[in-house]
Image 1 (cartoon, rainbow, N blue to C red):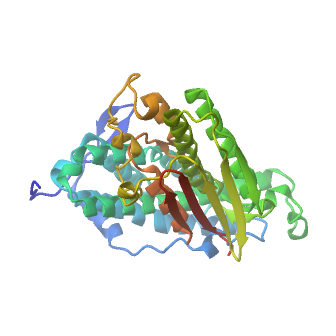
Image 2 (image 1 turned 45 degrees about the horizontal axis):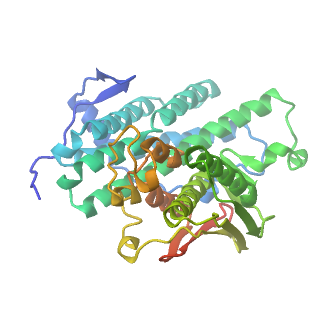
Image 3 (image 1 turned 90 degrees about the vertical axis):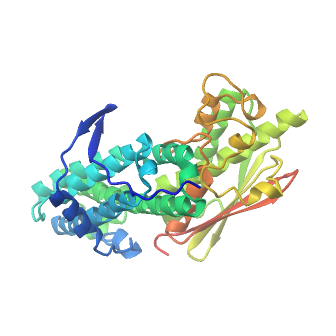
Length: 407
């Protein structure tokens, strides 16, 4: 292992349309970052997320929400910026990692500069800036995954995993806080434009199921149906064939959850199941694809989902790797994540197919081994879990447990 004495101490840059634009960095800039980074963060609480559930939104509610966002987001962004400073120099200067660093610094620089907000006009300006910065950070994970794939020989596996875990957990928190406030702000203004509902009538409104970005009566069966159809269509497009699926169990149960999180997790799991089933059929000349079974169960304060496939399972030697970053079955088959064109990977699958089959919320991460580890972090963020039981030569059972946000 190459020993690297110096840490990454970068020059801050922003990236626009692929062109680097220099932003001057002074000692004052760094002092401000460290000042914010030294503060403690408050965990994202379920009470905070559902604070305004039973009230018509008021100006006071929105100003309270923006105050929480102003207090939390710069601190969380500053801590990420400092974490990049601690990377070995050769890792931090990787162009993918350096670009992500610049995006985090720019987000911190823009959001911390807002003065304390006490009026709705100022709140709306902050909300629009927050919305833009959230979108700018969408491609963080694909860039980081590619950067660490290129630099993995320069950091021990444990240090890489720790850095990536903290980055992803922080990213989830940033998006939950940011998107929740943006959604509440839009919801408030929509209510203002319409006839203002009374507390008694609001419970009968269709919009009452939403509290910002949280759907309080999310139907897992419906979301799973949509995700399975999407993955099935992708399989048909790229393999010209696809397994069927069916959903059983407690199909009428509901949960309070963030739909985009539920969608990301379940799409990742379904893509693995569909892909494994098709590839085993191709290798074994199986006459028909066995269907994917999706079972829903409802417990006290949580929903469970089991996804069962007959895709051959995962070998014992690979089971310990499935939740490791930068490990994927594509690499096991000898396909480089940098390959392009129509070169084949597992079962003759092209890189374009790999890209499509691993396209998830947050951007494409084809063959970079981030799908399952990220899905597990998303599941665990609100107290859930994700486990895999493999029967080698037959298939996998994946068990997803999600805690209802109101639970």
